[in-house]
View 1 (cartoon, rainbow, N blue to C red):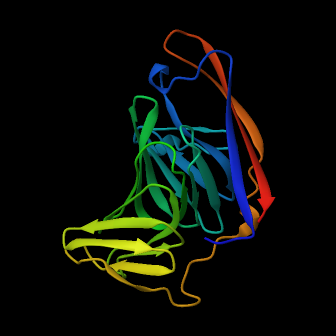
View 2: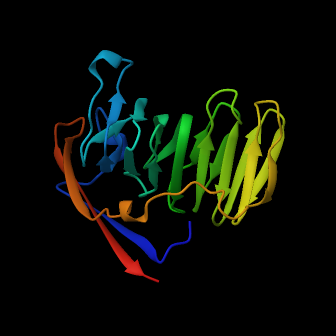
Length: 233
């Protein structure tokens, strides 16, 4: 998404060396911002859904749900890739550790997300009921319609997104829209029509500075601090 502001990030590790492979109950991402009613189901325990706040640590397999007029933004801890999740969305946050990076997957069941993916570390995928989008270093929106109501739409803003379904593969570029009607349908890619892209409130990009504490397998205390700064183009 082209805006007048770019986010620059720096991940500063304090108190011992930060090693992803050395952590127990490993967080793979952290919550940057919450607005409205947002819930996290961990371990399939729907009865005790968590209500995350800024700095909440997300683990592999966490199910994230947003209510109407709600919103949440998260950041992966290995490379700073960010995901913004709109109202009325449900997705799983998945991450597999591999050396010093995380193989990331957002399993979107329904709703809309905007992903800003860095070029630094790890694989990044968005899985939907119809298809899988793979990317490294770009920005794009995924809009998954309710079952039987239109399939999946992808909107590209730069770089290249590879979209695969059982029906075929397509490459999405900036300024293009891809539609996958069903699992067996191939991606149909065309130029984006003015006004069709789901809107994200630009005021939600206000992540600045926060930190959280955790322990590794040796019981060593570590603090991960994020500093995010906005700059005009």
